[in-house]
Image (cartoon, rainbow, N blue to C red):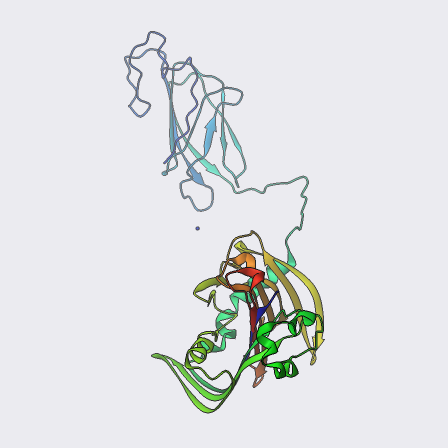
Length: 386
């Protein structure tokens, strides 16, 4: 026999110097090398010093990280933060010194190889960069762009962020015995003694009738404010039908889920699920635009979502979003038994919103469906709650 119980609830100074082995930085006799920042030592024969400063032509500000080198030779340096540079050489690698910096025109300066000391003042002009071919590829998911806009506008669209608010709410919680094989139901020894019970079976689905066990309804006024944060609910009317048991009533009350699609996470039976529009939701979900519709002269997009990976506390389903203010019109989420929540076989949540005073979007309807499966699997009965 296979029975289940269902609950249905409606509501983120580096200087690069390349040196010539023939220069004095590399002493072939393995003697101490000279420091390039030292002043020229007149006792050193055949030494040539080239130093100077590189400036912007118009602003006269020093240019840092200018590449200064002898073309076709592996001898070069870079200007420092003051735009200054210096070479100390035993011989000239060439008679031309090049200056290069991204965003500026290159300069080629002609040197006098007969002078032992030369001081240069270089002024560089800003130039343009020519790119021969540009290939642009657009591979971005339009659904992901839409979801990011929804996330960006969550703060203003979530009604719970209002300084204070009140609403009248009607709640109905129903528990049904379900997954009852219709042909076998009347053969159960227990039910033979209460034969009248089959008169109350809901046989809308003949292959899977269910038996209503408990129903509670309430009408209340709900008040809340954010600073300081507090809330109060005043019950105006209530009605309970079915099993009259205090422990059952307490269990039913614990089943009520205060679900808000706009929040980053929602706690379901003490398990935190990640919302499809959480701030970091794109790390956990895949999105796809599946439909567009014009509803009451307003354009809406239907976006489906599914988990990127198995084993994470995520949902699958869809939501409808307004094209201009990115508010949610309707959302439907489901989580199956692969989420490994004790006794839970399936959860489905549907929320609908409506626009109030052509500005704020507020909840209109909510439907929560929970399929409970007892610890011994299909061998025992189960429950629906809604």
